[in-house]
Length: 209
Image (tube, rainbow, N blue to C red; front, side, top):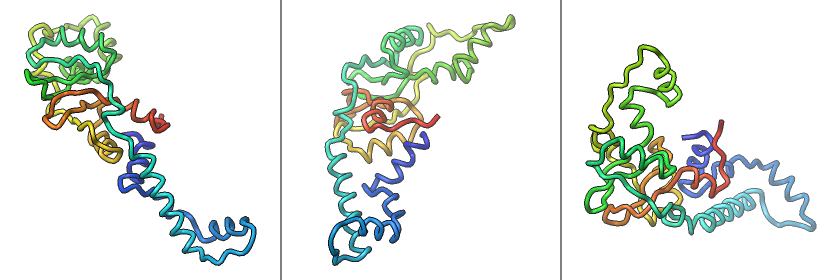
């Protein structure tokens, strides 16, 4: 979880940004002095009105935010009995870093990601794997055409329902480091894929470097 996204999570799970409490009486008095005429109102009154207005604005902005509205719809899931060589091609063709694994009822039972492949190959990154492959002593011993997706996938998958709102999505992404998560219906069947980058982009958030 990035530092920027973590700050947003801290402030919005209860729809109240913690920065509201950072407003001082001096800030309020300075603002009141710039309003023409006489104001029969205390700094505490101003603070209360601001907090209520801020909370209302956040609720209004996030009211229409659901996983179903932001998800990618046309997803080709993987089958648990598919071999890793075929799964790798499917993953590469999809353009995603990971794909859901579903059973015969299309219920999500796991996720297969690039990281899962690296773990099977005992590498921390593709760059690290490439450097190892350039070594004269490197020997490729893993048989991708013999290993099934079910043996390599991450399970259980962190998934989210279509009607999940802003706080639920934030909490779900906070719970794992994956770049995406399956969106499911009430019965756990796959309906789409929600990408972390799409969620961040939707709210003009920026990943910290």
